[in-house]
Length: 164
Image 1 (cartoon, rainbow, N blue to C red):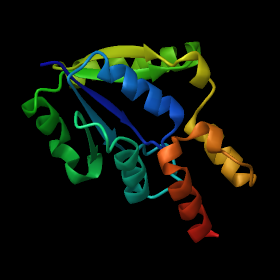
Image 2: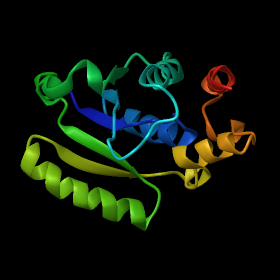
Image 3: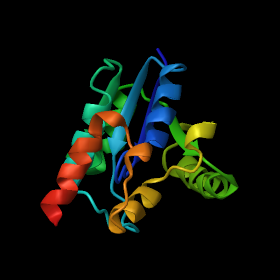
């Protein structure tokens, strides 16, 4: 049974993320979506909000599991290895993404040799969708509905309203 991991900050989850995960479902029996933390980024949404958005986006898919990296901490890689996840999926929109991810893959080969990395190209409809672009729209008070999964648009708007 082939299993893959797709990790990110998902701040917030976008139609691009959704597209990559759906692509994974056509190739893998199980997808583990990991809501992570990147020390180089300051997230707009809380970890719990990002987790809830992802859970709601994929609640109809029994073969998608969403977890928070923080629930496992240093034991995260033991957890994924024990559960049989051996493929680490990275979504690619452009050459800049690919270059960055290739550099990360080289580091990961040393740290996590049980993982192989697979790159999935973003579909044409979502090639320009990013969490950064969504946050910029939010910051400027513009509508972002076209960029986030329909199932969580209202939840994201509600979270924004609570902040303001």
